[in-house]
Amino acid sequence: MENKKTTAVANSTLYTLSSKLNINQWAEEDRPREKMERLGAEALSDAELLAILVGSGSPQEDAVSLMKRILNDCNNNLNTLGKMTLRQLCEYNGVGPAKAITILAACELGKRRQMEKPEERPDLGTATKIYNHMHPVLQDCDVEEFWLLLMNQNNRLIKKVRISHGGITEVSVDIRIIMREAVLANATIIAVCHNHPSGNLRPSTADNDLTNQLQRACQLMRIHFMDHVIITDGNYFSYRETGRL
Image (cartoon, rainbow, N blue to C red; front, side, top):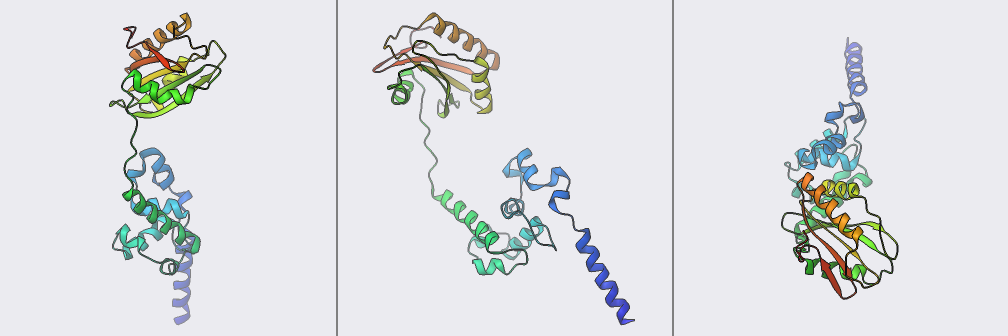
């Protein structure tokens, strides 16, 4: 009778181990990585975020369950988790030195982020500010370069993108690339600028045509086209300041 009970327990354990689903076997909408890609990091629990970092659990449990167990022992407090030692973490089945180091490294990064000040984004709300920001980039260029400045609603720079690198007197620009960059960056305001290596500030016919095309595209996409600035080494021309925008 005792042997039958032992066999039944063993069979039950084997069934549990063999029936445990690996995270890769979960429904796609439940997998932490896919869930984060679809919904953003804020939609994931602490255990799911940690599971992404450690990558795998143990033969007995998946990574999410393992992280839930560790967090539960920390009263679900990330600050308490960060105070654990490598030795304490390695006592959990499925956590080796590499995973323990990854967990504590993530906790340390979170602590350092709290101590950092938010990055100060430059204000590019005027042609003069655009010139001062871009002049160091363009002052020594011996060919024309065309740059896109992507901004938020407060005229703060999200990022700048070099759209094209051209010849001595002209540069090729695709309006579609500009609009794609603006949409991908969630920019509500854009400005563009390019240099005239010759030092001549007068806009060319091609410059005027491009400005008009870009203005129409921005109106269609409901993005504010703030300015097109032509930069030379020491001066600038602004379509906005001259009333041409």
